[in-house]
Image (cartoon, rainbow, N blue to C red):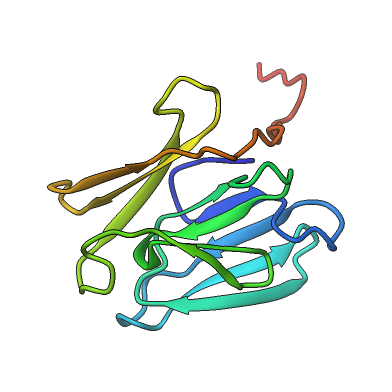
Length: 149
């Protein structure tokens, strides 16, 4: 999965759709009207979720299914590819009108990515260990052999 900093993630969040999917946020909207969109790799529209703020979303295999779920930071929740909320993280600021960001990384050294949520600025930080998650093979993007004179 692509884990670049920004508005687009690539992962396999829809098990019944061939290939990978794009998860795209459109954050430059009014508070409460911010969509996170899911598209097939050919650009076919699959759906969207509206949240307070959609910037900072992550893909992660939270249950070792080999299929990614995605986290919309502001919701402090995990969603499946159909847009169903499958878990909510117990964070004291959940629902308050403050900006929340999330990241993923192996915080415990077990090779499984964990989730990090924090306020902006980062005065409060919460780390959630991914106890049942798995590794999803990375997507290798690039031009293969490339020569630029």
